[in-house]
Amino acid sequence: MFASAIALGLVAASTVFAAPYSNSTLAAKPGNSTTVYKRCGTEISQAKVAEVEAKFKAEAAIPVHWHVIAKDKTPWGGWLSDKQIRKQIDVLNDAYARTGLKFKLESIDRTIDPQWFYEGCPATGTEANIKRALRKGDRKHYNVYSNEYAPLCALKEGLLGFSAFPWEWDQLIDGPILDGSVVHWGSLPNGPLLNYDLGYTLVHEFGHWAGLYHTFQGGCGRDGDFVDDTPDEAGSVNGCPIGLDSCPGRGIDSIHNYMAWTDDSCMREFTRGQIKRMAALLKQYRNIKVTIPFW
Ligand SMILES: [Ca+2]
Ligand SMILES: [Ca+2]
Ligand SMILES: [Zn+2]
Image 1 (spheres, rainbow, N blue to C red):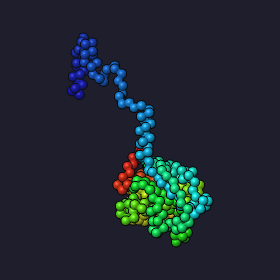
Image 2 (cartoon, rainbow, N blue to C red):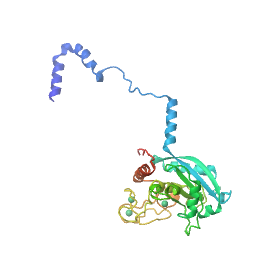
Image 3 (cartoon, protein in one colour):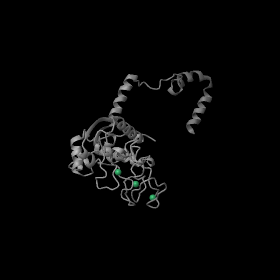
Image 4 (cartoon, rainbow, N blue to C red):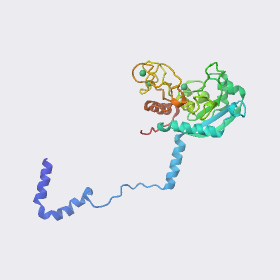
């Protein structure tokens, strides 16, 4: 109040000298100048932009090494084409678009071995043999193996895939060898597995590779999957049971989550909490830096 009263008084009292005042004082203030300012002097050529952006993309994308293990060179023998694998990488990129993660297909190799094809079950000598022979890269490289272990894994219902967790690289003796994910060749996009033909098996398995548990981990217990915005769940469910509330209250089950066990057509999301957990664990255990986009 005091300051503005003084200012008003000055204007009123100096009417005669208005012209000199406005020229010498007011015009000198940057805010009142008629000069058209250029907002910023930072400039970069389009050629340089293209160069750095290409490099940034290449660095930010997780390199994927795909190891096809087939029974023979037929489609039903697991002999996946480059095109099928590229389609799967596209599905991976789409599913993870909101997480800031990108994937780049780095290499494909193919091995024909019926024993490897059928018997590469979790925690078996065959699984270790396959990976010891084929695995590529360091802890930042994502190795994917496709085969058909069901029904020989003593699992009546068959098995779509399984994966290593990121901390296992350091904590298991065979960690660096066993790192990566294994998926049933039929789970790729447009594959023959009914209800599991959109390619979300690998989306789910990568979630484990990045440190996510199943949404039903820990049942109705307090910590559950260690992600705050996924309501706790009593156990795994198949299909797409809309509205299921297996642990009464505290939100309905995350049946649409990629880390559930529902049908591919039911899956569509990661939560913000899961995205943050993946970024934190990828940084801590794999030295992969993820920039989570705003949304
Ligand atoms: Ca949770
Ligand atoms: Ca609930
Ligand atoms: Zn899983």
